[in-house]
Image (cartoon, rainbow, N blue to C red; front, side, top):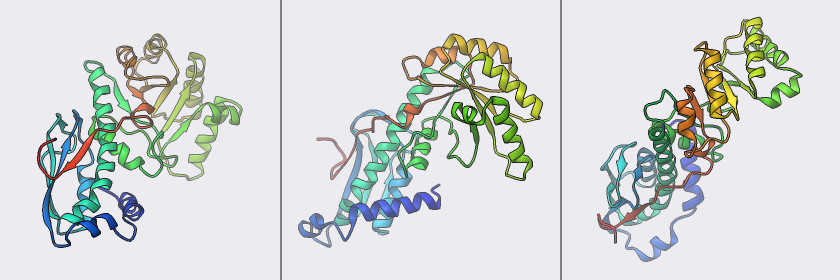
Length: 289
């Protein structure tokens, strides 16, 4: 389901692309021509963004018939028909690129996330995304993560307190930073989840002690740039007292080692900041070629 922010982004994107009209289609395609169009997979992957594409076509022309052949989150192979469209040819052409742009980006995110989950199969570890997203497209990219089987981290700076190294350095110490968090809540601010990043076992113990002293409940600890061996040590030390998240320098090549270390979550900026879009194309016939 798209919220008002996402719908506003669609309207902005349509204005950016269509402007005063598709002069190519309006000049070369008969105004009353009705035709079919098919969105096809040109490579294997996980489809995401079907509902976004539906909304794009609807906003351009409510009379266009949009028929999804697979569901969001479905795996597709080369040549699979993902969507069938029937309606005014000019409307189809005017919607095509924007619908594909959203779908290709979201499907690339979903595909990469699904690959990460496959690497972690048999371990207790779940994949988290980050705030390393395309400006304006965060909600869409995080939707792609969910469709790929991952878990969303915070949506923004407003819905979680995440104490990182710079916060500790500016506050003067871990204890001072966490005392500030407790005072923030006691001052009447909404209670949101609290996560603390630690750079060493020393900071891990410091964070646990400071939270106990302040009576502050943590959502989890974030292990920053810990090796798999260090993560395993931290997992044994914390012994289930609270969830642990590993982050920093983790990709598909070393992900399995972190899962086998027993960490609860791994956050990966690569799910969104450098993902390859899935190759999809709109054709007038339901076959590639």
